[in-house]
Length: 299
Image (tube, rainbow, N blue to C red; front, side, top):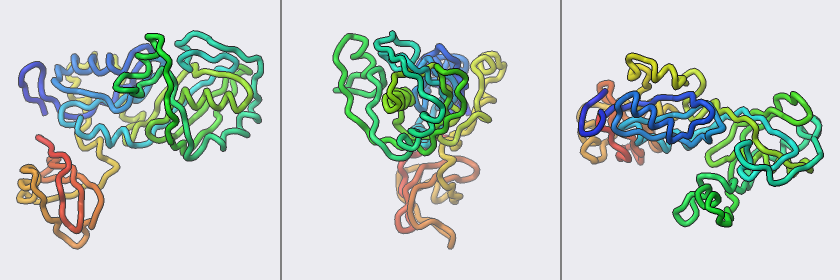
């Protein structure tokens, strides 16, 4: 759906971009906005310029569902280069320390359980974490001392995929919100008695979006009808149950008022999204058979 109002059009939906290496996430959003002549857009989870892969971009009303996508699982494939630590913990930064030791495949597999599950992780100095309202990477680039507090993260799965040579190892990781792969590589190297940085990184999954939904930037910009590449707003809520409601309940929700659920199979609690006559109405919290609108959609 597209409506023109002011600068750009009101376009609603998701574009799951296969971000190329060498581009910031902000630049990727700008390119998508320009190609679609969209008024409002944002992304669900930053990808560093070094990284490629899944960058879900929300347009219009889909921006109201970004937090649900960001809270979902992420899957990465990444290559670690042993023997050199960089200031950014990836290949873009200057080398600040070196180590001669190279871990064997058996050594690597032996430490993987220590980096699986709930754990404490200190984000990289060059990260988007905010310190007193400023991004850590901005402070680090200005030469300021950056001290970040450890955060609880969850790594659901971490596998060694290949060791193409003594200097490199390829991993597959499935993790939760807030996990930094660069920090994971840094900490694994320390546990293995060496140093390392991320040499390559590709994100394969963010929440409900994966490789099947990804669209290359060249295909999006080269399309005569790029809007046909969009997924509906509710695609960002795929991990929540859908409720089919009548027009009377839809009217109440759109006015910000609660509405009662009907039917024996109606959930007693939790979160869901309500749909009426094929249109997304609201994201709701359910308590004792009553729907309370958390976000209302203008679709």
